[in-house]
Image (cartoon, rainbow, N blue to C red):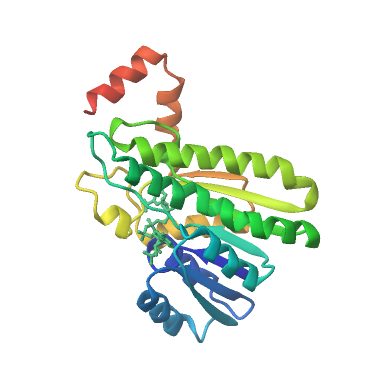
Length: 243
Ligand SMILES: NC(=O)c1ccc[n+]([C@@H]2O[C@H](COP(=O)([O-])OP(=O)(O)OC[C@H]3O[C@@H](n4cnc5c(N)ncnc54)[C@H](OP(=O)(O)O)[C@@H]3O)[C@@H](O)[C@H]2O)c1
């Protein structure tokens, strides 16, 4: 399989690259940090069929699309690159808000604008979105992040319905907390935090089983589902009690 992984230089993306590094797989790893990608390539060189590195900023949309065109068709794309801008109760500066949407949402469309016609032509292709449990519940301190991932869910769902008849499979993954550079910055106690390997192994298994929607850890997901079922005034009280 030829697999493109965005945000492969650290955390979830790098661990997915490790899990997919096998004799059958040609990996294409994309991110900005060259040193990290080359180090990962040296680590996985022996295990994978081949590893190509693409140094790109996913918010430089036209250059990104050029690079994706050069790759040509792949069997699977894992749209993992993402950022958070911390957990502040202050008004989010516009530029930060926009940057977050550029990375977490629009870059994925920039990539798929190139790949979808190729997937359609070959009547095959897997698209994996890395969303978040944070997309399901809105906390006052994660306005931008939650809304970008909620928009991503809507986008993933639309793509899934639209391209099903073309043999394109869409998998939307909603992880809770997994140890990574992103979560290392969090200064609060993260409920149900998973180690990088445990969390990413669950993502890998869900992709392999072609689950359309996979939210985990299950207990954390159930709690969120339960809160969402409550009447609005009770939900408000719970969220307000956390701040
Ligand atoms: N960890 C969690 O608990 C958790 C939970 C739910 C969802 N997620 C999602 O999982 C994904 C991966 O996050 P992570 O936790 O593994 O964090 P991470 O270690 O910070 O990884 C983020 C990756 O995104 C890449 N990236 C960021 N901005 C980019 C840009 N402008 N251009 C190209 N690449 C860019 C980074 O590479 P460079 O800096 O080298 O460019 C890095 O490889 C994100 O979408 C995140 O929202 C994480």
